[in-house]
Length: 187
Image (cartoon, rainbow, N blue to C red):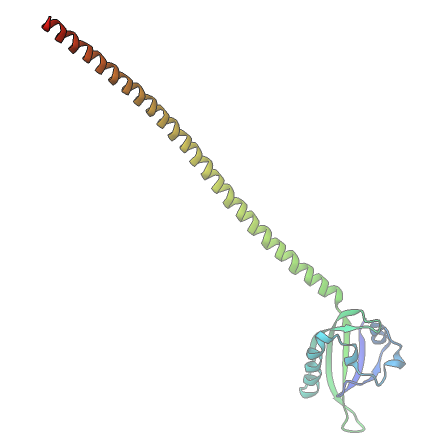
């Protein structure tokens, strides 16, 4: 369903079909001589005004997307396509604007953008998990190597104590032997 509006250079609605009136939620007769800008959301007004200016300044079809408000103030996204025309009776310029509700399309695009962002985040998380697992494996290997080195160090320490003990015993034995010899020679 496409709403068709005929508007002049000031944005006054000259004609509107039933679909256009339904999109805006206003009876068709109450739309005539009202400004279409009144139904454009404030964030989209600069875009809409630039669009209208371009429609009346350049030949051919012009296109834009804008957020419109129905009479109840509920916003919806609309695709606007327009071409300018001149009246046969005078120099009054007007244009025909086709308005289509593209809210579902915009929601789908936003959902697609979010899905792509989530997919990118998931890929990044997977890379981070792989990186962390590699770091964890390296830490475990390092820990095992450290434990092995510690065990070897303890073994060496044990051997050193044993050697120190043997050296002390040997020194004691040598002292005793020297002492006996001195004692025997003096005696």
